[in-house]
Image (cartoon, rainbow over all chains, first blue to last red; front, side):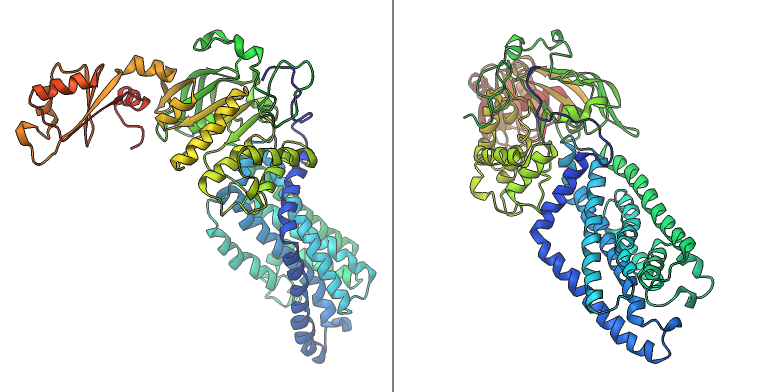
Length: 273
Length: 354
């Protein structure tokens, strides 16, 4: 075509990370979501119901009967915000592994998108937005179930939702960065078996990390889940320690930022060769 | 068929959807003298274009120009460097060395601008199995910055163009290979591109699906869309390409129209002789060296393939008769026109598809 015809795309500079091309990839993910929102909704409600029934009420019955927690906190209220955070984290970790691998390796839909004005960073940001959206959705549903169980004592508990989302992203960003370096999904099994699941169990979700052997405790401090759980719990129980909570936020934000920077590099290395 | 908005008044140029007129800029170009058009006028301009992956050189200093409105082909076997070249043109793979401009623009600095004017049909379908046929097109239009309404309008028209209207609500997975390819072509057209890059567009398709696809590509060419394609099928190159380069081992080994290449590198006809290897009756041997003696002077050139002997000659029938006179008794005799396959064999000593 000769000069003079109006280009199809009127304005398209390289754009910042949050520019509209990134939103296009988020729209893509929402189109997919639109097809199966009901299954997301169903699991988003049934999961917290099952967890709160078994852990909060079932296990909690024995915990409370045997002297309970320090300060007389019912176990349900102790464990609920932690479960909210861990569920958002688990979902985000999953979304950052197999579905991203599919877009890179199996369906190669990233390759198709890269033939448009979209760039690798736009794909990364758009998909992180989707993962965050899913974390928001799950956390809101989880919170609604907690309220239904009558396990909320402070209005600050609502803040457990953004805490869960930040925690989810503190996993999502580094895992997405890792996924972009892998050729197959084999390492994901290891990641979940020896990374995500132990964290879920030992990051203070079900019992204080002070109960862990002393030499293991520092391990918990460097994982984002511990900080997310501790922060959500302190807000939820209305026991705020500004300095400690600020440290929690800083650690979580650090994981998110470092993860995004790393993912930006691994995405470009993988997709723009 | 006009399936897009007419261009704004006064525009000299035709996109794929704006009718059949050939833009003035295209007519000016004289085919075959690529060196005379400037980088700004050519759709693609490459000099010393090189792509390396670590120590491996995928494309080794190739020169070519593609004129607007031209159908240009890269013919070569797998691993010749065709796909790497296409990916550089599509600005998804950085140039290692040399010069490349697309629409006169430098891919390193104008990637998004170039891509907004190009449609790409990649070798793998890369369709989104999570979305329906229509949604695959819709979101692709969104990637190009189209409004949802405009994207939908074009998607519906394009599904008609590639004869997939009835499948628009279906999932992608159950579609046949030919349907998927047509959907990929529709997807590549959603931004009303001036140029289509097609990487082995019909590999793996049955003959009927290939012909339907060729027909659609031919229509696009007639509307003034520049076609740039890779193939390892000679018939495809002959069907679609005004001009092509033959690539082998990362380099361009010949350039010209299909006709020119055949005239330049091979004879008009080919005589194919097959011999029964084990029951060598009447002295017909299974051994090339023995045959060579009997064939001396019969034709200007021979190629011994594992299963047959190719004799390059201007008149296949006459040569066949001469061979019989010399006492050769091949099990089967076939006279055919030379093809680009023969050109490739001549240039590289190897078959295209091994």
